[in-house]
Length: 205
Image 1 (cartoon, helix red, strand yellow):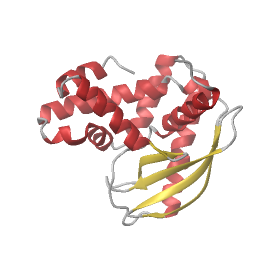
Image 2 (cartoon, helix red, strand yellow):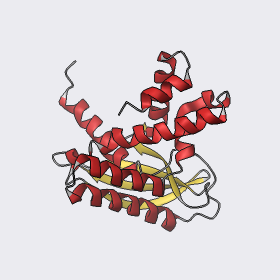
Image 3 (cartoon, helix red, strand yellow):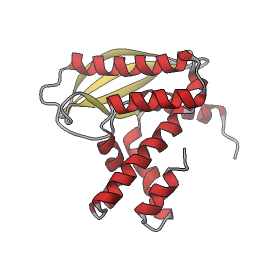
Image 4 (cartoon, one colour):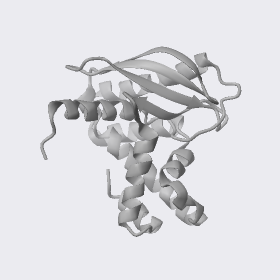
C-alpha cells in the first residue's frame, strides 16, 4: 500500500522523536521531589546526546552501539520492557522476564537507531514544563527538514531514583500505548509464548 505524503510525514515525525526519546523510559511512577527544571534538563541532555550520535557520521553498527549506551544511561530498561509486555509479565518466570528485557533492549535500539541518518538536521526545542498528575510534563517543539513544526510532550518521573523519561506524546499519539499495542500483537501472533516472542525480537528491528 502506498503511503500518502501526509501519512509518511506523520510516521517520520513519530520515528524521529521516538528515536530521540528512546534514551528515556516508558514506565510510570511518582515524581515526588522532581522539579520542572530537572525534567527539562533531562530531556535537553537526552536530545543533545542523540544529536551527537547523528552528527558523528559513524557507520550504522557503530551508531547503534553508541545509541545502546545512551539508552542504557537514560532508561529504566526493566520498566520500559515490562510495560510493553503488559499483563503477560504476571505469568512469566523470572528467567523469561530477564531474557525478554534483554531482547527488547536490542530490538528497540535497532528499530529506532537505524532511522537516525534520515533525520540529520532535525531540531527539537524545549519550551517549558508543568506538573502532570504525579509526573512532570516537558513541552517542546520539533521540526524536521521540509516539515512544519509540531508539538511533543515528554513525561518524566523519578521512580527509579533519578529523573527518567517514561512516555512521549507526539501530536496526540501516545508512544507508550503504541509500543505496548505492537508488542501485544506480536505476542498474540505467537500464541502468547513469551519465549517465542523473545527469540523473534532478537532478529527483529
